[in-house]
Image (tube, rainbow, N blue to C red; front, top):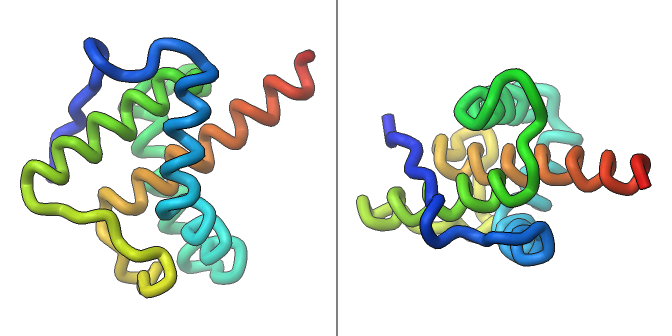
Length: 123
């Protein structure tokens, strides 16, 4: 299992920068993965499991802030890439067979949407 690598020293430092990073991941795999989960209960279960894993890695007692999510995604991607992983083309992914890194990135996007939705309703 790939260990989580947090990018505390060079991750995004503001919610605005974090949103830019998270938008990049959403375009890369998040939007397609979330759409696949909405269309297939089996895929939805995979997303739920990955979302719980990411949430627990950050802090199981609260929803992670955008900066924390973006740092997690960047650290995970950096570590996975250093081991040979490559971002998949979301148009060709078989979501029932997607790897754990891809699912964790989709989960980050799912959590980021929930955080952004809360920010809007709290304002």
